[in-house]
Image (cartoon, rainbow, N blue to C red; front, side, top):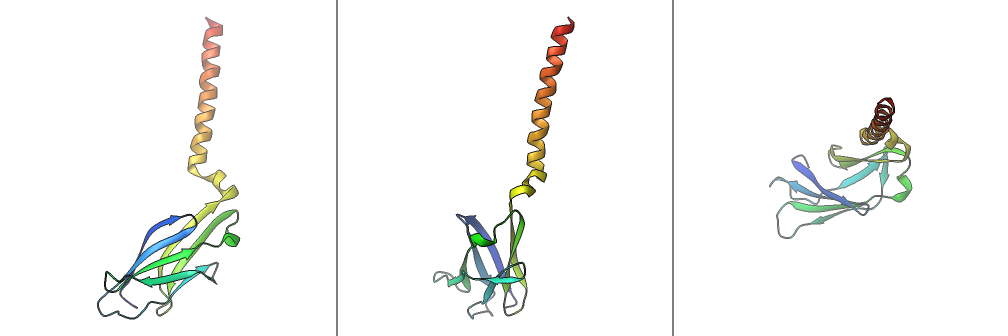
Length: 126
């Protein structure tokens, strides 16, 4: 399948969902593979959409055993061409401490602490 587009619709409750669209010349059932750390994962399903030609619904249950601290990247590949059609990343555990949102929360807390100390100092000096 050379003229295919995989569009992620959502990840909910540990299930990746997407819609695969192909050109008119592509009419065979697509063969896709889910990969994590270059290892093929089970559980990917491709179901034809009966209301639209050359369109399939893709579902993949993300295995719990591959979720560990750090950044986990998953690839959805086309078996026929070897092309990566989509990828998604899940970040868990200690790596989140380096996340910019965590840094912003820490900065806000430190700023609040400095404001209180400054106000206390102003009251004591007057």
